[in-house]
Image (tube, rainbow, N blue to C red; front, side):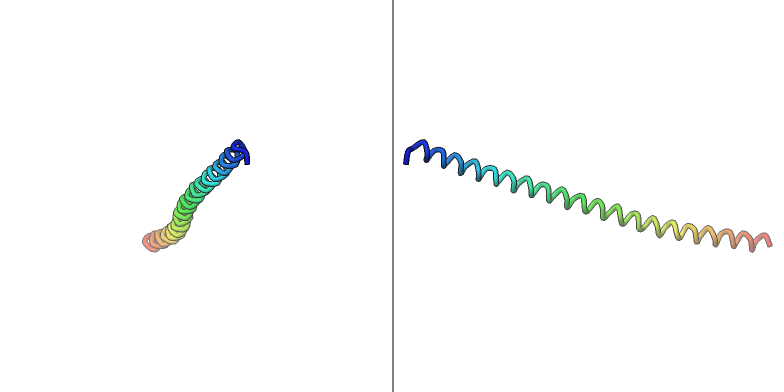
Length: 74
């Protein structure tokens, strides 16, 4: 084979390998970012659930206070 063909094949192999490594690294970084976002979303959802419970307790406490005030003034 001609030396230019061999050089071209080696260059092509290097380009393909370099591109594949770049894609794999980019994919790893994307997966890492997705995992971090999932953790943040989970923390946010936990906060929403806790706030729902707090709001329910607040309504219950408000009703109890109103009942006690009515008993006090009756």
